[in-house]
Image (cartoon, rainbow, N blue to C red; front, top):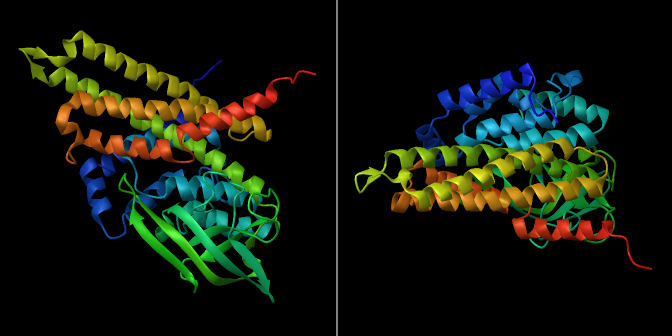
Length: 385
């Protein structure tokens, strides 16, 4: 199988590499994290100028019309920079949801401004009691004349405070866990009754608890078809899962390179510690995990858009298990091989460690995806008569 990329795809990745290496240094990122907003509008506009935000926007709406492979290359390129901006949440997940589920008028309104960076949208879906189950939606949307009243709570919504609007999932019918009855509503950040309790996450990014207290939105704020949003939400989250695997690949490669370079320069007993065979074995294991993750990240990108739900979820769970295990192994080994300084805020590998740990916990942790993979595999086994 040919895994080489086209000239256009390679040029896209090279352009993003130059941007993050030139305009998004480690010290620049630390300053952005310490700022009140926790992200940079200047960097966001720079990404828009490169066309990164328009990758998943169809050409008919002013975008580039790219797909999962280009998203893989972009996310891998930004991985070492550990961007604090909502690239994954707005330009990948929310854009995919609007593109695949919004009405023609909603697509015409939203996709151009999402691609240009003039508007940021974030999906607010998972809830405190959902435990990774996308169908577990307790938030309700009750008809109130020509409007809907939203009541409920969403948990750990990344970049909620940065968004111009939230795409909030809520039940118009059915009970929590039902596959039908879930709708999506556009809710502006300043809508009365909407409360955002923002906080930093372990990797320095920002998230928020989203609380909706009888939030009134017009019927026109409903995205797509009433009660039929869950499959589209799951597909958008799967596209996001493949993208975060690609980001992890970029972070892990940078972590391995930084660790190898340190072993070449750190002297002990009159020689670089990289000459010690035991440490060479550990770096070889790190490289093995990295290359396994590369294969699975590519597989996830190629399968995140297939129509067969069961096969798509099984493949993505397999990828997340391999990538999640690698995130923990590579980050832990890197810190240990750097010694005590590996945990200091001044050293970049400590930030790699935090970002990789956050990725391992995102979109379902390794154990939950291992369980889902086992359950889906069990269905493929013929049952004895």
